[in-house]
Image (tube, rainbow, N blue to C red; front, side):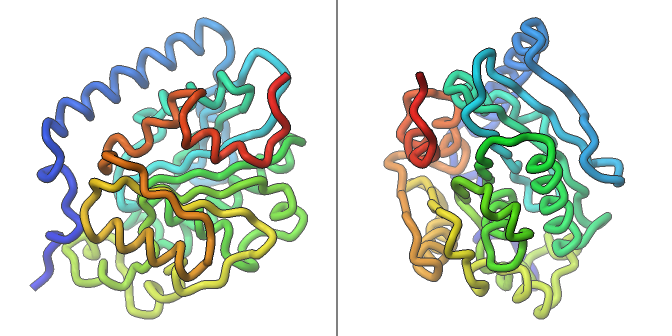
Length: 269
């Protein structure tokens, strides 16, 4: 019998629906503000598929780096428009932020989605000259880590990657085979193994930090700890953070999360 019990999130977070509504409002307000400032570009194509589009949020001053944020949703849901507010802290830190969409399952397989993100990263590398940072949450965390796996990116692009941060990543996909979500994901044992970042080698030239909230569901703590252990990379368990608010540090230019994320960058002038 298939079930999602281990991966269910919202019923374990008090007032989750209110937090999601507040997040949507912050995203709308941020987009409106950035549009008024003429610092936003929407639905820029990076590939041929319908959802191969990205939003770009730019700082007013000299750009120190470009950050790509990959959204969550188990590869079957969510949209870039729900996460725009997370660009705020980086923009205030003189870092450009790109939030792409990607084709969702079952219209694409996980290997297909990974290749779309690879295409997005390569597009960004060709478009901009600054160091590139890749951050992702949950399914996006998997995709961020996938970009840091050995041989995924062209060496010339990999050399541009300053930091990769999978937040609450799904790193061993095999348990998902036994969930009802797999009706859409279409994971076989072979595909789950092929795409599980915890079973792949990391590109040793790319800095990786795995970040997770201390109050998250056990399966997410396990998946994050597994990836950090297998890749022998920096690991942070953020105190009193759950699945919904673990990414909030991206909104604040003074957060510990952004301080870690920008550790390789030249300081702001």
